[in-house]
Amino acid sequence: MASGERPFSQACENNKGPILAVLQQHCQAAGTLLEIGAGTGQHAAWLSAQLPHLIWQPTDVAANLPGIRLWLQDACSRALEPLVLDVAGDWPEERFDYLYTANTFHIMSADQVVRCIDAGCGHLSEGGRFLIYGPFNVDGRFTSESNASFDQWLREIDPQRGIRDQAWIEAQFARHGLGLVADHALPANNKVLVFG
Ligand SMILES: C[S@@+](CC[C@H](N)C(=O)[O-])C[C@H]1O[C@@H](n2cnc3c(N)ncnc32)[C@H](O)[C@@H]1O
Image (cartoon, rainbow, N blue to C red; front, top):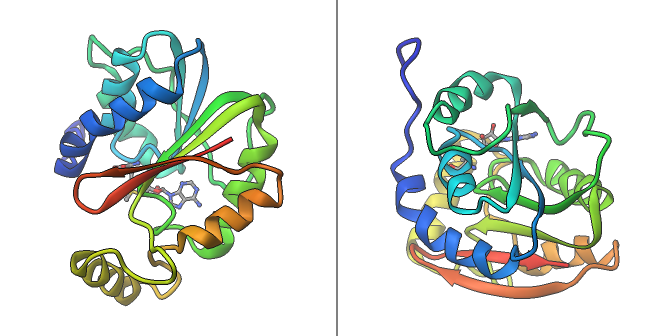
């Protein structure tokens, strides 16, 4: 990517509308939202504009912040200046009404996913919601051939990557007294899992 050129994900353009519909349902009250692993920044720029009652705080590892900033220059964006957040490192002090992360749990190692859930639950306001978008296995099985191929590809790049089992994620939240409040099937064999 040339310097100054915005990073681009076609998947983000495809999934942002369906994700918005879920956020509109579960993030109705005004509040603060922490996005973990904002990636290109496309979701932060567009979703924050569609959800003006939310104070949208994008975060990611330091290397991704310049690209996110370029997307946040969009006139429509209402997102805050992005912050560095590696889930394995230090987290911001404050609590948030909503936590949102897309396509990160199969990129992080299993230990990092556990850390993300543990720290995330500790940063959720009373009655808050933690929304996770991505592919998930159900009962230890891939939900599609394409997800099985995707998982194989991920593990060839890094054996610590891989599609997580939904029941395993639910068990991590259960340790914090949080349960699955909604399970939305989205296009391309993805889901949004909502915990609270
Ligand atoms: C496949 S990208 C998804 C980006 C974006 N959310 C999307 O939906 O297009 C995975 C993201 O997870 C982030 N990530 C991976 N490990 C992380 C960690 N330990 N802490 C925070 N973010 C992490 C990466 O930097 C990257 O932005």
